[in-house]
Amino acid sequence: PPRFSVVATAPPDSILGLNEAFAADTNPEKMNLSVGVYKDVSGQTPVLRCVKAAEQRLVDGEKTKGYLPIDGQADYRTHVRKLVFGDTIDASRIAVLQTPGGTGALRESAAFLSSQIPGARVWISNPTWANHQAIFASENVPYDSYRYLAADKKSFDVDGMIDDLTTKTRPGDAVLLHACCHNPTGVDPTAEQWNMIAALLSEKQLLPIIDFAYQGFGHGLDEDAVAIRAITNVCDEAIVCSSFSKNFGLYSERVGAVSVVSADSATSAAVQSQLKALVRSNYSNPPRHGAAIVATILDDADLTQMWHAELTEMRTRIRQLRSQFVETMKTTGAGHDFSFLLDQNGMFSFSGLNPMQVDELRQKYSIYIVGSGRINVAGMSEDRMDHLCKVVAAVIE
Ligand code: PLP
Image (cartoon, rainbow, N blue to C red):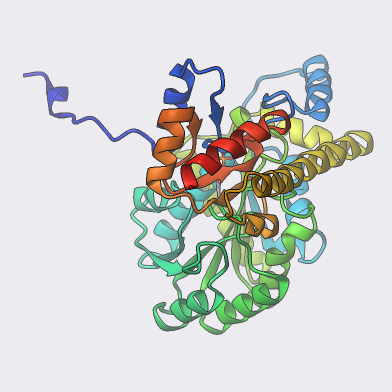
C-alpha cells in the first residue's frame, strides 16, 4: 500500500493562511493588516536603498560562490556583536553564529538548550509570536507561559510576570523575552522594569533568551538594546536571537544570528564549537548573500548612514500611522479611545477588536486582521485612513 496515505493534512499557518485569502480577494478596497512586514506609502515592501547599493557592489566584486564557514561570515559576525552589544562586553565572551533569519536563530538556540542543558524548561510570554512554542517543541524543549499582558489587553502586567517567574520557575530554566516591540502586543517593559526583570533572572539563576527581531523599530538601534544592557549587566550568561528581516527589509534573504554570552572566553569557545556541530548536521552552513549585504553596509560609513536614515524613516512612519489612526478614530464618533496605541512600539498592537468584529471587517469590508485582534500598523496607509476608521467604527458600534 502507498506509505504516504497515512499522512494527515497539517493545519494551515493562521497568519499566512489569511494572506492567501487576501490575495484571492477581489475587493479593490481590501487592506491587509495581518502579516508582519513593513509597507511604505505606496503599499510596497521596499528594498532599502542601502541594500540595493550594497548588492550592486557585491555583484560587481563577487569572486566565488564557495561555502561559507559553518558559523558564517566572520566580518558579519563581528558586526552583529557590535550592533547588539556595543562595546559593553568582552568580545571573547560572545559566541556568534550566522543563521537563516531570526527563526533559524531561535531554532539553533532551542537545539543548543536541548543538547547542552537537557531538562531546562523555557518560559514564554502569554501572548507571544505564534511560532515560538512550535520552535521549542520541535527540539523537544519543554515550555510553559508567564503572564505578560494585563487584563485590559493594553498594558504590561509586570506584577504577574514577576510573580510567575518568582514562584513557578526552577533554577536553570530559560526565559524567552522580547527585547523590544513585543509581538503581538506592542507592549514593552520600561528601562526600570527591565532592571527589575534582570535582577530576578540573576537571583533565580534563570537563563535569558532574548528575541531581538525588531532592533531599531521601537525607539532606535541603541535605545532598543536597553533590555540587552540591563540583562548582561547582571547576568553572566544570555542568548540573543537577532533578525535582520525587518530592520534591513531582508525578509526573503534569511539573515539572522545567535549570540551566546558566556561567563569566560574558554567557555565561549566551547559554546561556539557546539553551535557549529549543531549547524553541520542541520543545514551545514548558512547562505551567503543576505549576510554579505549586511556586512557590506556596516563596513561602509556612507552606507551605514543611509541605513540609519532609512530605518528612522520606517520607525517614524509607523509612529505617524499610529497617531493618524488614533486621531481619525476620534472623528468617527464611535466613542472608542484608541490612545493606548500611542505608547506601544513596533509594527504590532492588540487593537482590542474581538473575533466577531475581526470577522465582520474581513467579510463585509475586506479588511484582514488576525483573529486575536492583532493589527500590523505598518499595513495601514495615510490616504486610506478615513476609510479604515469608518469601517472600524461601523463594526465596534
Ligand atoms: N521573532 C519575532 C518576535 C518575530 O516577530 C519574527 C518575525 O516575524 C521572528 C522572530 C522571525 O524573524 P525571521 O523572519 O527573521 O525568521
